[in-house]
Image 1: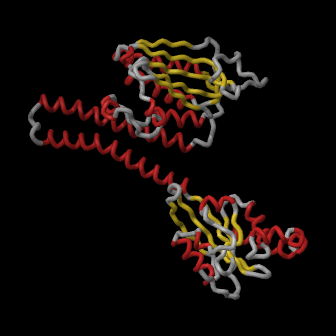
Image 2: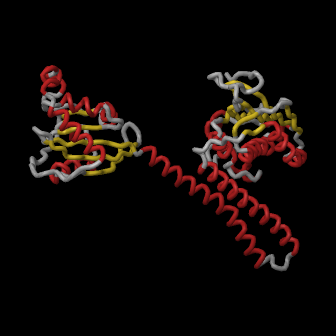
Image 3: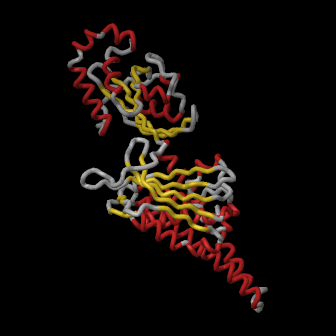
Length: 408
């Protein structure tokens, strides 16, 4: 690949490219001493360009991938990050050997021909799917013209876009199902069952259940959205966890009686203080207890414990554990339980009125509180969901009682 040697003036460049060009010009104006002291080393590493060592030292400090080419399109220098994008890069060899993405090659040719900075996005499947944007900028030095290429990894942004699209698709599907059922029953009541009181009563009960399911899903979506909106703002209000545990247990006693489940609650008599949002913590614990009542009711018993402990790093923490004695969860499901709309048993979850967002909401609440959720389960022996929250430190730096049961 030959890049035309056009000596016309470059258009002004801004940002990173402008700063690098200014740095190079400053360096090359005083490069005699450096070049004389390391001429042999520079020649061995990149014999195609006299300032290759200086260029390489400059781009090595960049956080992203960078490649520098000469007028003929041969590689003068590149940093370690660039080697991860194009492992076949070799100094002194044509860039086309290593950079085989057509969009990138075209951008290099345009930048060399027009003497204008070029931006291009490309997709790389090897060794795994990745998206990049590249900037190809002509730079005029005192003795030579070069092309500087810098890269930004767009993969995290694209992953987020894919997750957002999946989320919208899942949410639409979850809403469409009860909505279709409602429309179907309305049409039936307006038609064949118009004058059938028994059918009308039966269908109205089902319609109410479907409408309740939609309302619950919308409520969960709004709650999750609010929590994510404030995810960067850690709560700073002192909250005692013991009253929260008692309030949640009292509020779910009716559901527990309906399912034949007995609560066994243990908590210290003195306050267990954390910095948090009381409403969010209540919602998170309610979700865990409701899940245990819905899916672990077969064990006829539910243990809820509040205690102090320590993280692996020795920091004091509060733990609220919800232990059921139901069928348990298979190990392959455990890593995905906090994903939105993920269900171990889709049919059973919907029959129980689940939205698939409960544990995702718990995870986001705990993340906002600088806490975490741990899940332990054995098939046939139930499951334990534990909320871990940093204990509030008082003015003396103490968190109250000495912690017990340090985390493994």
